[in-house]
Image 1 (cartoon, one colour):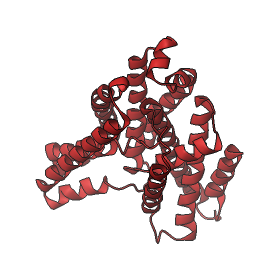
Image 2 (image 1 turned 60 degrees about the horizontal axis):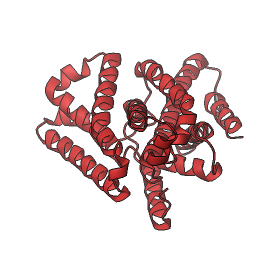
Image 3 (image 1 turned 90 degrees about the horizontal axis):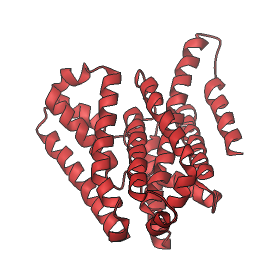
Image 4 (image 1 turned 90 degrees about the vertical axis):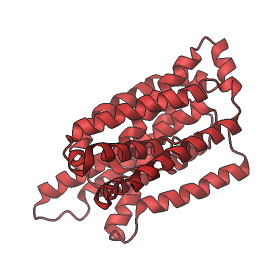
Length: 309
């Protein structure tokens, strides 16, 4: 049913209001933006479900644990080291690949050590450590930003906020080349994720290589987060909303169904939301602001209800 809704929304996005003028150009532009929204939605939804499975906690997202802040710090350091002209002249594909590699490597090194020892870490310490790392990364980005001139700082600021209206440009091909295999691997790992979701001790007793699985899943999370962030910018709470809806609509479902449901729900929400803000409201408001506000409220509701596991 959700898949049919996504197909309907895609058709509405592509053909609604399409005139008889230069329709080929308009259709190509809409198709590029639609592909970007679908890829971002699937990446964010799947990455959040994967991260929550590893952390054994339904209120955690990659953004809360500092992944987005780490991306902003990398952007700030790149602008500082290369300058405005050097940063702008970087080939789009090479820049995207470098960002994905750095984010993946640093994220696995930091958070793999944290979540790979789940038996020694309480949920409270996991949340606290992740938030501290996020604050540290954001503070580092702010410190580097104070050393930049206004033109360089404007480039960093542009990357600090999600912009779903921005066309993907030449990055979409590279993003799809990285994200689609990661999404396929996530689906293939479904049975092993079911075992991982039982907890560290049970997973080990069933023969799962727990630490290796945790590091592999974290690598997938980092790659998918890098893809979504590079395409539209940081989105903190969107994944939390999607994962929560997927768990609510598919209670007790196995991970293959849960990952597919989260991806489809994310596509439906993002495409319909952006369609409403572009075609109905005329971009008089910003979808990312509404997502962050609604996601923050949803996060508080989960905390108050104690829906952690």
